[in-house]
Length: 166
Image 1 (cartoon, rainbow, N blue to C red):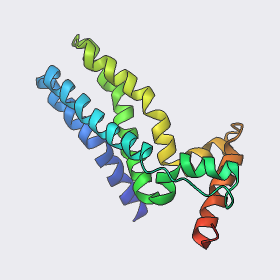
Image 2 (cartoon, rainbow, N blue to C red):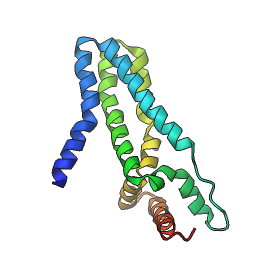
Image 3 (cartoon, rainbow, N blue to C red):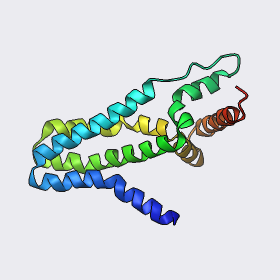
Image 4 (cartoon, rainbow, N blue to C red):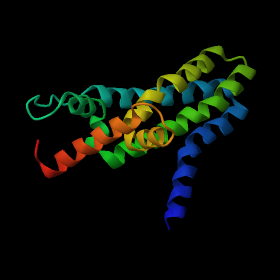
C-alpha cells in the first residue's frame, strides 16, 4: 500500500509541470510565462511562511544551537507532515525547471528561462529547511560535516518540545 501512495505522490508531483510542458508544445510562450508565474507564487508563499512566524525562544530554556535550529526549521518542527509535502512539491517544480529551461531556451524565451534557472538554485535552501530530517540524515550518511550534529540538535529540540520541558 505504501508503494502505491509513493507512486501516486510522485505522479501528482510531476503532473502540474508535465501538464504545463504538454501545453507548451502548442504555445510555449504563454505556457512558459504561466508556469514561471505559478512557480513564483508557490515559492513566494513558502518563503513568506518561512520568514514570518519564526519563534523567539527563551534563552534560559534553550541553548544557542537549539535556538538556531528552532528558528531555522520552525515550519518542519511545527508542521512536520505539511512541511515535508511542501518540500516534496517544491522539488517537483525545481527539477522540472531543468526541462523547462532547455525548452524555453530552444524557443528563444529568455526571460522565463532565466527566471526558472535562478528558481532552481534559489529554492534549494528552502526545500532543505522544509524537510530537514531527510536532508540532514542524507548528509550525515554521506559524511557531510555538521549534518550529524545538526540532526542530533534537531532531534533533541523535537524531544524537548514533545515532552513540554521547554
